[in-house]
Image (cartoon, rainbow, N blue to C red; front, side, top):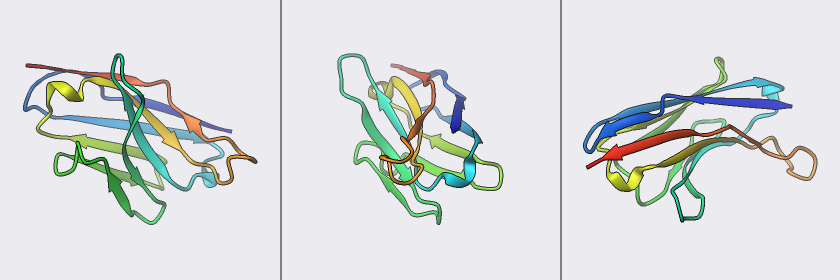
Length: 119
């Protein structure tokens, strides 16, 4: 079992920056891909960025060039550096951890952290 706890959300003005963190605990050796998702009111949950255990990253087009995902495997921590924030980035951001075959171990999700960007 893996538990994920996010932190770092808050209120920021457009153009500002925030850094989200996600600390994993439990059976962390089972974690491979990690990701950040977000969900804005009235919209479907969107995958923001992913990172493999070896550091390969992928980003949604809407955040490319502005957000950076990283991980510290030794510290079992996932990060999302968010720069040049826009009001449309306002959402609840969720940490995600893939634990292998989802039929064997369902992925783990954090509780979410609110990011609000004012214009």
